[in-house]
Image (tube, rainbow, N blue to C red; front, side):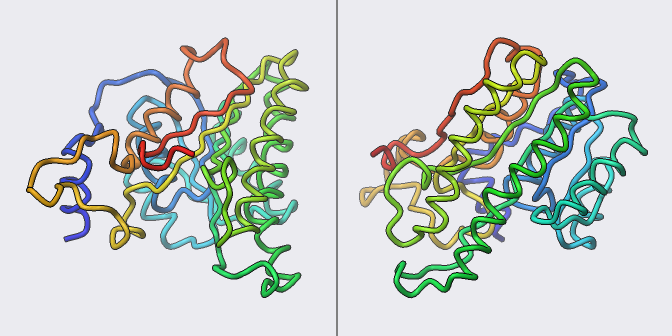
Length: 264
């Protein structure tokens, strides 16, 4: 039911065509790859010819996602450096290299006023949404430097661009991802490593279906597509472009993808 709704919501524009080869022969890791935006990026990469490793905390879900795309599932807590090192090692052991790292794992975790947020909750949010990006990026970059380049794609949020009073922890962490992206792009550019950032707003995934606005107005007319939240396939298309050779001269950039109603 939810899947059918989302297909309708996205205008039926699910782009899982075969024969697309933008990433032919590339090896990509997608964290948070078991569902939502991450699983769509992983599937889009696989359909574009990449060999894909999906990483996350729940192995059973990862294995389902990996089977669907012929990829590899690696259970990983991306907030722990030793587990990130294992993810990198497992990828190299299976596929020999790493060309693309997508740092998608994250989440708001809590809805609290800042004065009610416990120190450990703040630390957990920073670890999941920012520290994980640092750990995975630096670990992947070591491999990419030896390979004369690669692509790192960080998934931030519009919460990192504008005020986020209900999620101060999340907004602060995602703003950090944006700044980290620009700094790493500058530092690693000489090594031919492109680092870019996607900042989705509310996105039409299964987990937020109940919060999506109606696709028709009070008169029954269709709401213009740009006024609706993007669907995960739009984010996956953008990630595929940033992972491909077509983005060779783009680095250190921020790409918000959101409904026009979210502009601030």
